[in-house]
Image (cartoon, rainbow, N blue to C red):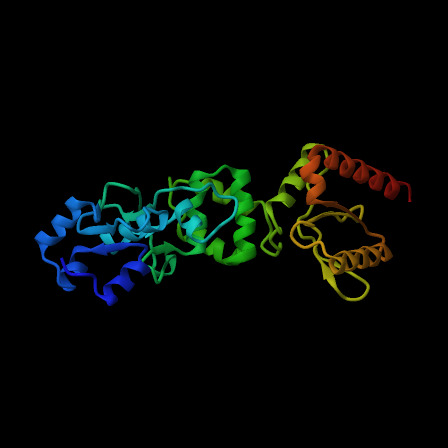
Length: 312
């Protein structure tokens, strides 16, 4: 059997070890020669006429490539697309989830097929490694069926922060709002709970803190409330109660937390006090070490602030 040409070897490497029967025949192999290599274990059959070179690992990416090459119309979506986009707050799947039209069953093994009657050109991206992956907004929407409300809310904030806008998500939601579509009710619940102008929360930790405060009796705080300081700078605390001019901030000292960040935050807190706002801070380290204790402190500070404002 002839060796792979440099051209085909480069293609296979870019595709995470995946090759087609047509690729091999075009490179000089015969059908019988390919069958012998499958029997010997050098080539592993993935789908009809789609093979993996055994020296390449059976990876999540190679499975996605094989599925996309096996059918030119499927799109990797949901939590599988979330893994390809490196979304946070999503559980990791080892197998592709593929969108297909309702009247087609292109492949049966090694993938989870999900059917759709709405898949526009803007809903997917063609990667250089031959994977057709759902766009970040479409992947976000299709994740809703596999997540609970709290985790999907965290994902929504992360996607807004890294990939898209609230207007884009609403346009997509309206386009896909067919009766009975899995996950649609969850999308509407999460999207309707935040204002269009609201900036995305920096991480899921902020959402956990705000929900924990609400569970302890603190009225729902406004996320990313725009607070204009005397110097003209507008800041957006993680949560705020404008009626008593109180805000809470979650500081991620494990992400940044350097000396200059701390100096900047203290300066902003002093500026906030000049307009009679109180900003109380808690760090991710405090929350990690004693989440309930940190929340108890914040609840006490909230009620203390409410009492002070009532007596003023």
